[in-house]
Every structure is written in C-alpha cells, then in structure tokens.
Image (tube, rainbow, N blue to C red; front, top):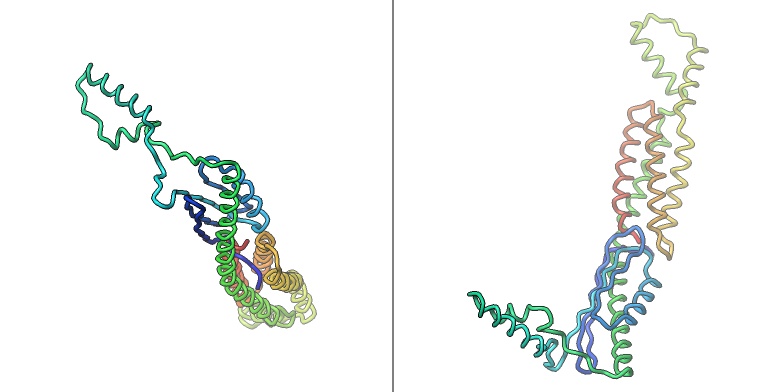
Length: 295
C-alpha cells in the first residue's frame, strides 16, 4: 500500500526564548498543489523555506498553513501607542466640545487604528535567524504530522478502492461467462421469438437462422470491451501499489472504466448482460467518488 489521501491535519508547538507559537496545517482535495500561508509580518524567509519544503513532499491538495505567535513568560503581545492614544482622546474631546456625544468605551478607543499595536520584537539579525530556524523546524514537524494523517486516510482509501476493483473484476468475469453472448444462444432466442409471433406455425430456414444469429452476435460482440476492462483492472491494481501520487492517473482510468461499461450496456442483447453492465456502472461511480481524494 502506497497511496495517500489529500485530506489531513497537522499541528506543532514551539518556544524560543520569550516567543511561543503553534503551526496548524490543513489540507483538502485539489486538482493541483495550492499552498496558502498566513504568518505574522517579518517572516517572509520562513514562508519561502516552508513553502519549498512542502512542495518537495506533497503532490496535490489545497494546503492552508497558519502560524500563530505570542510571547511566553507573561510578556504582553500588544502594547498601547501612547502618542496615538493621546491624539485619539484629543479628537474625542474636541468633538465633545462642539456636539453632545456619548463618550466612547475603553474597548472602542482601543479599536481605533494605531492605538493598540503588536509589541515589537527587538532582536538583532542573529537572534531573528535563530528564531526563524526554530519556526522552520517546527513547521517540518507539523508537516510530518500532516503526511502521517494523509497516509492513514490513504490506507483506508486503498482498502475501499481495492474492494471496488475486485467488484469490477468479478462483474467483468460474469460478463465473460454469460452464455447469452454465444451465437447458439442467440439462435435459440430468435427461434423462440419467431415461434411466439407465428403461433408455432412458421417454418424456419436453419441456414438463414444461423446467418441472422451470427449477424446479431457480431453486432453485440463485447470481447474488445471485456479485454479492455481486464487491462484496466490490471492497471488499477498497479496504481494502488505505486510509490508516487496516482490520483490523476486513477481519475483518467475511471473514465475508461465508465466508457467500457457504457459500451457493454449499449451492445447488450440480453437482460442479464444489461444487468451486469448497470452494476458495473454503479461500482465505477462509487470508485470515482473515492479517488477524488487520492493524492
């Protein structure tokens, strides 16, 4: 088993000196690989490095990476800008001298732009580099947790899809073994139909009957479709055991399965064979739903 899901979650936490943080990584289905990062200002290098690392280990999926940072040891994450606060209060007072207004609450004052600001991280270049390295290493831990979650979900998908491939193989074999495909069986059906229509009075030309049966059998021949179904089954089993992302290939293969099932139904001249074709389409539809989550 080697396939992975595109759905997963990873989290890691860390501290460095007076800073604390946690990474949260969430991935869902996607046609390609789409990475979105949300980091505090000033960590562009961290984002670039983490983005490259994620691209090196992920093939597909929409990945959201969030970094939340704070201060450990009780250091406040925000501080009041005294100049901005003084200016805001002065404006409020000036307005109050001209018109009657309700004094703003403390929460409303703090919500004014520039009054409350994030505490500056006063570090030298060496300190910022060490913090960045710690953040990157923490990201790798979260990414590893995400990969493990995707593999765990992939193990479940492997079991489900393998079961569906087995069902397709079983239905294909039923179609192969269906006796209604033979010219002899078709000839018997034609004989019965003519007998019913004529009340049993028609005299049948055996040679002509054989020719008609052969013609119908040729038009209804599904051997090519059955051969292709067998080839697709072998390809699906091979994809399930590859050590690389196979979601796109599986999506294409499912389309091929569906095409052969449709052709089998359209060529069918027997109720049982049509039933097999419809069952085959239903299983292929189930498989298409499942592989949408394969990386």
